[in-house]
Image (cartoon, rainbow, N blue to C red; front, side, top):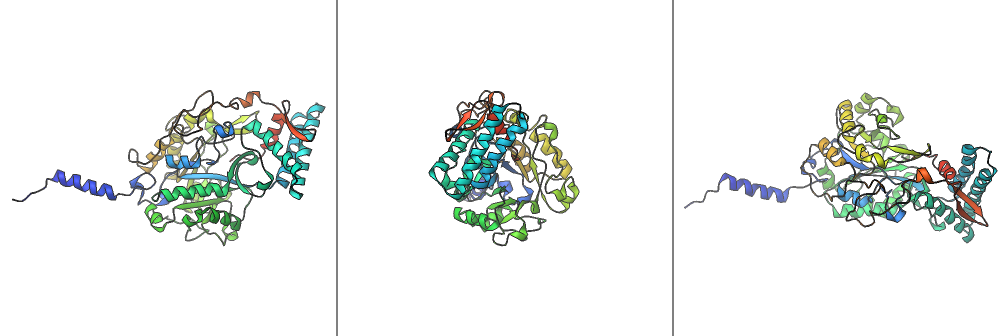
Length: 463
């Protein structure tokens, strides 16, 4: 007697065998054989900048979950601003800005305001210069008090110890305003995540705010261990017509794509894996405070501004910024968390889905990168999965809540510790006024002047 298996049985057996062997790359098997440049990668804007209980839900932060939690949830592009918290000139400039900003905004009609702001500026400037020359305990204490005063306003970790003053850190425009920790620690965490996820490719985009040179950045990458995974392109000054597939990158063990803005190729002979962003990528405008501001036109690099045909002919990868700012006191930009349910949504006025559709039509291709605030809200994954053609075919993502409490501007309860709780800063724009004032050799927060300091400190772009 001969047993002849049915076609149905063979199909089941085949699917089981295939399922055991099938690789899943970046949460979808269908992406494994696709070119890196032909995939839409969801990104977390200022990935390190997290609004949670540890910083009293800082209104300066752009995300609710940490970088590693973002990666667990399916984000594959993380961005960060690199700053050198140098103490001397940097804090001196901040002190001067506080004093001059007060006069600029309020004039000289109030001697109390003018004198108080000038005292704050001079105190910070004097303390910073002393710290740069001799790290004396008194000066260190004064700087710490200055940082704490800013922290009390924004809810961030503004305290800067004297022994951290030369460290490369991840900060939101300014390390006194929001300090997200050291760059080496952040990269070490990403390296550890890659160790544990051998079929995932992660992209890191660094905004080189204080113009670190290639050798400096290389030393940080080497110390973190992330350098081991970094991909080096065939040419560092020309965008390729095609990129390796995810399978290629996985096979080569080069699963970390690093772009830096700006780091010109001619100035980088020591770390070719640090790809100059604007040799490979064009971005639309990032500084938007209304849904009507969103555009698909290239904004950076300036050589490609408003020139879609040239950008595409040059093989640049399209990068779509899609987030909004609110303005406090008409001047200070903070993430528009109150609009994010729509901004990140598949449909609606100013939605991610509608913008991605419009840009795909104008570019004749899907964006390679989509960058959002508060990635867990509004369901941007639905949009990105649609662009990638993998809707309903993904796996391995850790689900996080997709709602925001209207009163506290924080996410709904979740398994992640520290993700819930009230924030005293939710209505900061309507209630807070004041600045740092020096009294008897120390700093205190004066309730009448805080908004002066905030206005002066936010003269730098938030992106």
